[in-house]
Amino acid sequence: MVSKTNWKAWVVLGAAVALFATSGGILMASNMGFKINTALQNGFIAPGPKGDNWRAIPWVSPNTTYTAMCNTFAAAGATKANVTIAQINASTGAATSANCAVGSATAIDPTRGVRVRITGGVAPASPTNIVLVGSSNESASFPILQGGFVAPGPKGDNWLGIPYHTTWTKAQDICTSYGFVLATGVTVARIDAASGAATSFTCGLTANNFNLVIGEAIRIRKTTAGNPAALLPPHF
Image (cartoon, rainbow, N blue to C red; front, side):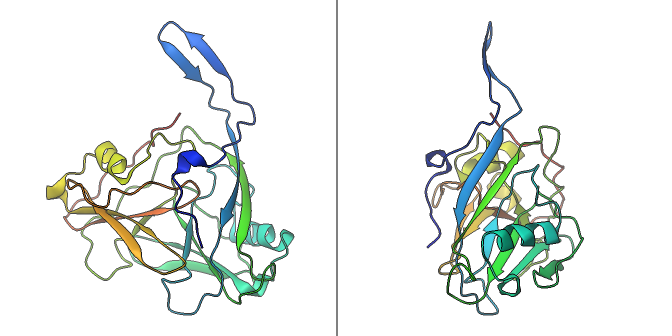
């Protein structure tokens, strides 16, 4: 089962992190590297969302294209035909998808969530985890969000790949950074790949203010009109 542990309990590897004492406090260098062994749910059966592993990858990583990420799975012993990778265009709802047996030179946008579907149920041909490595990109922003969500989606499903060194810890932190309140009609959600169930938090309320999980993408739906501007994510 995919872990629901708070992201602060995960190991973040500082490949070349330096701390400097300054008159104003502590300064952390931006050249931070990451390595994470993230859990996956295999045995996907259409149509989902059970078995939909929504993952965040480091914003600078070897997984620059669908083929490159497929090769990461293959290097870990996965059968390529068992793995399908996709990203969703929130403005249209269309998925850019590639089965790893074929691959694709299409670039992966690391600021957006990546959906991994794994058929079969026997590891390592159908993996239950993957090791992701990379580093941060301090100049990159989240994409402009698509507003005006109408159920059931996926048009208007904004899947964000949360940076591993974010200062966000809770769903509410995302609402605060964007300035979302109850009147803006925004929900922040995570999907449990083992069950397909969504845990959803409504900006401006208090119930279901869930912990963010490092390596896991989150979904933002905004039912009111207007597309919030790109946001530079807060981070250490």
